[in-house]
Each structure stands twice: as structure tokens, then as C-alpha cells.
Length: 212
Image (cartoon, rainbow, N blue to C red; front, side, top):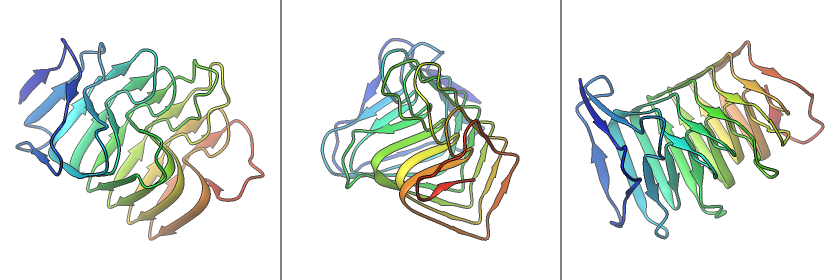
């Protein structure tokens, strides 16, 4: 495989509607070397697609999103998000906090990402934090992601968002120090033909649609 290390600076994507493509997640691997966030794409509402690659070992030491921060619409198609860490929330991906933000995860593997929750307002999302926005998951696997809640009670071991829909996917062995071992959705949640196995949360939720 070809491994590109983004060990000098975070890659800023400034183009409007852009697609970033690799040769497959085993062949094209972009690494943050456990030093930096890999991509920043907060430049206004646009539709962007990342496909056929892996984003691994990203690290954000003082904010949200270990691999990617985005706004607008972002689609991940056949992407592996592995071992990314954020000291706040959104171990792999965080949005810029707009209520129109949409993240689509399709035919992807999201595994071993960690939101450490070492800031007072970390929110959670061991893998994905889309604050105020929507997450759509299709034919994907989320496994062994963690929202640790070191200083804040992090919700959503895998996903924290306002609206979440899941189709033909697997969530297993995700953990939350707060509520929602797999998913925390504070407005709406739906699941079709999906499995939730072995996800754990430290406390049960009384809020609507904190799930699994």
C-alpha cells in the first residue's frame, strides 16, 4: 500500500464541490502519524466526497475531530477511519456546528476511534460528532469506538448527532462514558435491517432517541 503521512500540517480543502479519490482503502492510506488532524474542510456549504482510501492515526490535541473537520455536505464512500483521536469530541470527524451539515457514511469501516473528552464541553461521539446536523449510515461497520468522558460525560460511543439514520449496518463493541453506547441522537433516530451488539454506556439516558 501507499502510505502518505500528513506529519507537517493539516490539509486544508478549499475547493467548493470536490471529490478526493484513492485506489482503495488498503492501497491508499493517509496517516496523521498520531500528530495532526488530517483534513480541514470548513469553507462554507459545499458538497464534498472522499472515497476509496483510509484515514488513520489522526490526532487533534485541543479541539474536535481527529481526522476531519467539515461543514456543508460530506460523503464517505468506501473509506476506512481507523485509530483517530480527538482530545474533545468526534474522535474521527467533527462538523463546524451548522444545523445544515450532513455526513453520509457508505460502505465504510469506522473502528478504534476515540473521543477522549478531556475538555469541559466535549459532547462525545467516539467516531463522529455532527453537532446540530444529520448523519446517514449505509452498509457500514462501526466497531470498538469510544467516548471516554475524562472530564465531560461524553454521549454516543460511535456517533453523536441531532438526526441519525442507519441502514444495513453493524454497530458492535462501541462504548460511551455517558449515554448511548453506540448512538446519541437528540432529535430523531431510525434503523433499518441493522445490528447493534455489545455496545455499552455508563449511564442510561432519559432523553429521546439516545440509542443502543
